[in-house]
Length: 371
View 1 (cartoon, rainbow, N blue to C red):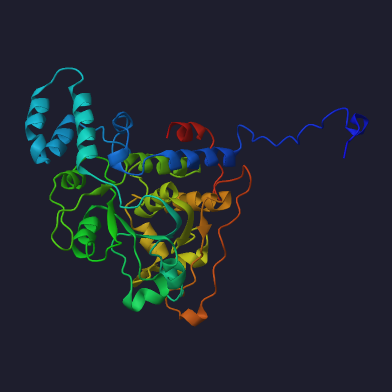
View 2: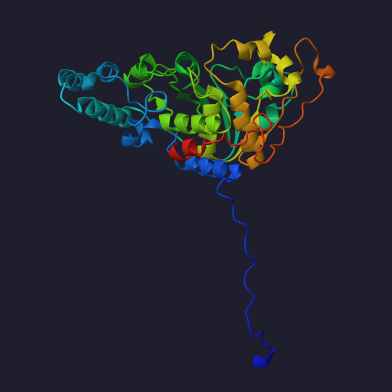
């Protein structure tokens, strides 16, 4: 069938113009920060050495020369190099020592067997999991991320599940999980998060080659990249979190960062909403109810900004980067049957106040831009 040219429109209509994000749109800045996080190497073995040497621990590896030399000395084959660098006091020797340490991290640390997943469950240890019956939902994910020495299976299986793909732990819990669990279950691996603001025993043990799994076999340490720590801290500060003193991201927040870097879809379980009074009455952990969340979170010596962490989580949920499963367990001193489910994360007021979900802190875009 022939169509007359006269039947065609004389002018092709323009495509509908898509709305453009404003430069000061907090969600646009957060989206960009998440994209940068996903582009970062999640593991020390893959991290850019120049970037690692730009910041001090736990956000990099640039430290005092004696601490860098101590870290190098912990690696048997690096001791001659460590002595040579220690005796070299010329300008730039500290920078060269840091670069050498970066090369050691590349050589002696590793990455998990799998680094990409479709769905991941990140499972906190809040008392809200007690009586939640969320175990099957958690185990159904492609990967399950847990923290420190939180127990699974047995009496906890119905609430928290049986499977663990990756433990994310600070130094002492990492050593414990490595020696008691890793190597027994084929799926389980343990990632080390060194959170101290200096190079010390955490880094030194990771680099020493002494790590052994539960079967006594040498185990290549999976060192969380300090660049992930830096990125998560930048997001937390940008949303109104504390930026001074000894504050550093919690192990739970680092696990969320790793999941965002490795997983297409991430669901959170066992994270309490610190902005909701009823959540603060939950047991401190699903396996330990000696006191409630409020007392637990007030006794961490200021290392973690729990309110700042919730600003991050709720903002990422609203952005669509995370899916949040609210705690369903009983409040401390009550039975599961008395429990009233908590509400989902509060909606953030666009450009609004801190505490309503986390608008970007004024002047904080630079923190995200440089993370």
